[in-house]
Length: 508
Image 1 (tube, rainbow, N blue to C red):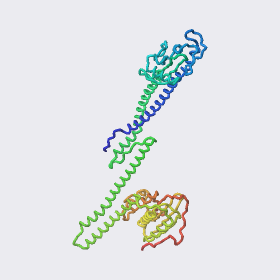
Image 2 (spheres, helix red, strand yellow):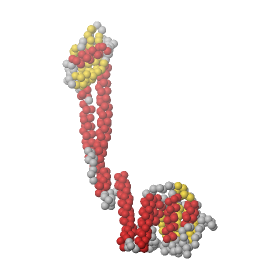
Image 3 (tube, helix red, strand yellow):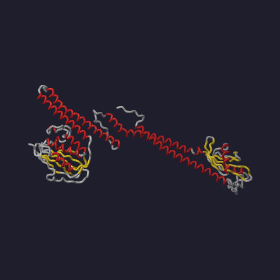
Image 4 (tube, one colour):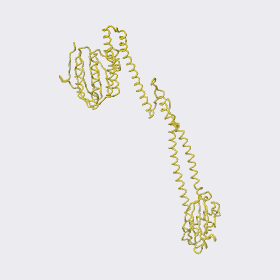
């Protein structure tokens, strides 16, 4: 069987979907983690820089850098700065730069009138005194604002977070600014390193998910592959192949469902083949008979011609009845023309009793009437019951009685016909409802052999069954068992005299 080429298999698409979801999830987790850690570092840097304002306030209150003795003044590096222990802005900034030692990722400088004047002598931080652009920018912002300002600048391919604190003194025209900057790249390096580690771990995780997902998807899809191979191998000549259905998961249930469908399909094909064989067999006999008589007929003999004509017409009539019965069987088996209504079983029983009373040669009697209702097609049920009655009339000796009736239990209604003929052997009772099967010919009295098959199809369409039992004293009893819908119990009711019992004297 030709298969349409697909660019991606189901296994690859499932794995791609799994990896896409995992990648999105890992990216979201990593991105949120990076943002949180980065903001935490930036907040810590900003807090350290803000602490420089408080640190500058303590410079003048500790000791004079020139004499080494404590200062009694309260120097304030804000817009209301009042410095009593320093003679100039330059002296104060010199003391501030000397005492406020920058950390490893920090740098500081004191600028006067926009020009770098003092820088730390220690080697713990980095030097920003040569960054004229940063100094000019920070000095301008701080002096214009008249208070400490914070900002971010890029210098020498580095991102710097800085704070600029203006310093002024009455009587000194110089405008000083203390600048402290932090290298954000260095501060964020641990975060970057952790995210790189996370990225490598995420890639390893995706690789593991891909490997496991590929294996699991293959295991999950292997029954579908087997199912597809099974479907490809099935032909009309061989419908016996079945897909393996081990396990209790959804795919195993699918395999079992497909196997059940294949069983029904195989049964349907077998029935069709059997029907064709039976029809061919049934039609072969009348065709052979007519052909043989036509070949032997003496056209010059009017009597022989009339006899051959009568025989041919009889055989054609029999073939016509066969075709009609086949059409009827196909109709009831297909469920066509069924109208489900609420059927009054008592009225149906009396109607059947009236109709069978005209069949000559037997004494007919209705022995029981069930006063209940069932869901069904009244015309089809009447047809099936009359077929059983006609079948009983054919195989019951002339003059003997035939009884019928209906009874109801708590879960079903039984419609039966009881004859007193030669009966049916138990070994062949399961075959008599097949097409063209006449119980080995022992009960064959003409007909197409489809009557009981039609009855069985009608009963099955009503979710019922048809069974054959032995009549006490000899004969066969056919019973149609129909399920009840109302669930109420009912007992057989006696037949009123002259109501439904109909008798017809046997033909002499």
